[in-house]
Image 1 (cartoon, rainbow, N blue to C red):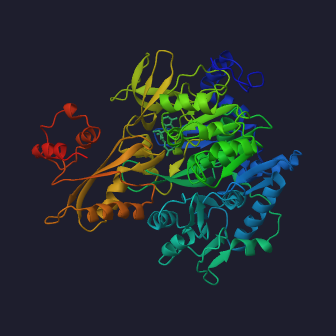
Image 2 (cartoon, protein in one colour):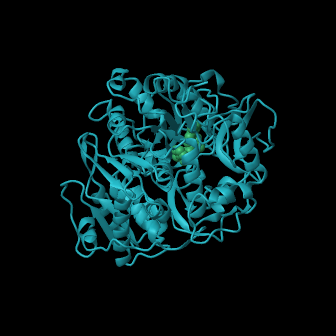
Image 3 (cartoon, helix red, strand yellow):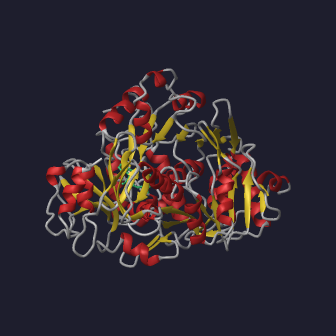
Length: 639
Ligand code: WT7
């Protein structure tokens, strides 16, 4: 068992306490969550706790409660006398560039921008698209939306203008908030505003664009349409009463990829989400009042929403937000930041650890990491080599690692160790959090009750942070998560449960890739490849990749008469980067005269996956293929 520095003060001090509380949380879930819901301030306390029916995908929490998320992240702490506590430490791309905001200062900025939005006629329920890099104004813009009840939809700053367009149109966003250009590592001119301009040209919904000046990058500002953030802020009042929201009013929408179709707008509501992100943040990271907490995720993903902004700020934490990349100015940047701000809790992704690990220990050891008490991991299974390195080199064998399993859909962490009490097993996310009842199902949807078990991971009950719907398409919500196995939320992941009841996530069982912790749908990538003029057909599978965890392997069939060459290969790669974004970078392209299809025309991805994984002896039954000879071809020209 790891010696945990904070064992005496830990929120959960013993396994007995965990087991007791866990049992209560499952047995009388409403009573449990009623108590927990008191951790936040309500304008009207909820009497009704949960109202859930997985058969119709109806999920409501605290529905008669009234609340405001920004009030809970800001005003509440100031009213309690903590206005001068640092809320946000922003670390810029360059090591000598940082800014700090106390809770009072942050509230002042948030209120001002909320008033700017109001003065431009943005109201409760309007959708606001935020397309920014990791600058403080991003956090300010989110909380300003929450303050007035506008629904924010953040589009990760690396997404291309095509992806941005789809998301803006799907939601009918009235405004976009962006910056002139983005700064990350050696790149100082990521064309944020230019990307927005490309979208806006033919947009029917966007009426206004707000632009933060981050650089001196030259951009075009259209009169009465594009507004500089700083100019608008100059004349805005710093008092803005928070809108009284119903618990089930939407807080935000965030897109995520699925196995089919276009990305889904995952909708989270206010009361349940704030309760869940705040509670999990405090307990799982064992957050104590003076801790400095840093999550390296981008706010463009759910991890940043829940564990840079809403969770930490609702807990009156000091949260670090970093603009740059792990390898700028060199591979020691993370550890330099930890020393500089005396970070106690550090939360990152295995893909970042792998990239840093291979550069050697000197980059880590150069900096003082004695402030650290706890390390976290998220996004994919943390495998033994990077676990050991994180534990021994980064944490100097003094910090437990919480391997947190969750999803955009879950709003917060569902399976994770607790720092002071859980005996860790590298590679296992260990045990369910309070109120979470995971099950392992077999293909028929029957629960495997005994241990060990292996199968599909589903959740048998609801929790306050669960997504409520796919924006504009409740049927799709039901079909994706509740139709396969009646009465369960199906996660899309496979998992094992060992003899001690520990969960081991084995990865997606659907056609979703996890590339550097980013979720990408195969259908999305195939669609993008299909936009390249010479392509007849494409199929995508993942393959093991040293740094990214999973790489993208593309099988491409060209139009009759077109011969593959380097130019086409590059063209396809660039097309996908252009349509989705540079994080969707194809690693291998194999041109092929055809794809393995059943007689009914369905591509047998299983075979393509086996070939990409180089598991050639284990192709399974190929007799149902329309043309089995294709397989020989594919094996012969394997990349
Ligand atoms: C998928 C969700 C929510 C965090 C960021 C990703 C995989 C996430 C773990 C973990 C093994 C993990 C799963 C999940 N995943 N955390 N600790 N161990 N796998 O959010 O983009 O919604 O992806 O990421 O496959 O389904 P996301």
